[in-house]
Length: 144
Image (cartoon, rainbow, N blue to C red):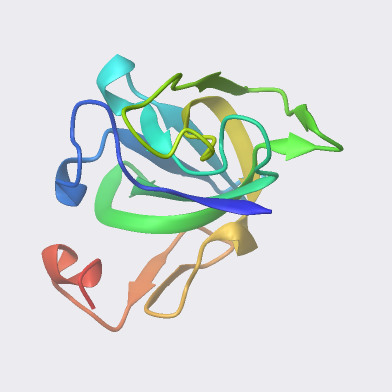
């Protein structure tokens, strides 16, 4: 079971201002996913509190120190029902309605995912760390 991890505590649905960062480590050919402060926690994420094993995480992509805008990554958050190292998950608690939905708050602390975890239909990062996209404007990439 998976979850869609876009909304952040301090950014709501202002996607271009997201504070979660994915930095490319060319030596390891991995992305390092990090929550940059409390306002960047993923919040009210359905299936996150108890059941989600994978999350599609929306984060600011940094390659070679350059920001390339918001991109999506498939990130394991549990394995065999246990939260994986580097991931912290809290239950959002009782809500006014739909209490059967297990909404949760997720924080990432240097979680490493392979280069192919980037959902790359419109953009990619080469093994050497070169960013490529068919869409030149980083503000337009997310909304395509």
